[in-house]
Amino acid sequence: MDAEGYYVEQLEKEGKNNFELAVYWFERAAEHPPYPWYVDHLIGHALGKRAEQARMAGQVEKEIEFKRRALLKWEENIKKISG
Image: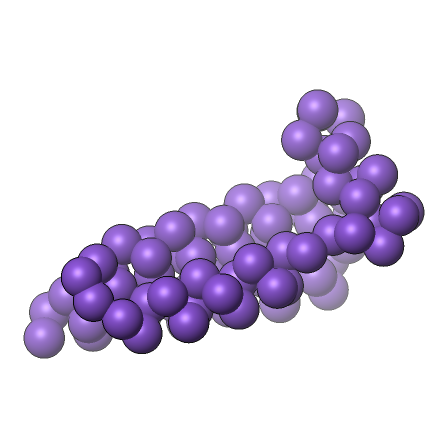
């Protein structure tokens, strides 16, 4: 297990994993100029990273859910950029 995975696991054991809360606030930030497309990019990247972590932990359902959310976020980002 890599260091990042270890810390995520420790936070989850302590009930302190605030990933969903962080995504919520990133999405709220994406609603305001000047750089909403960049925030959407960060959210999509973070969701993709969580999908990879779930895959490595053998959590197939979570992996699929994070990938689905990441793809939806990337599609939303493309629509914002293209106007």
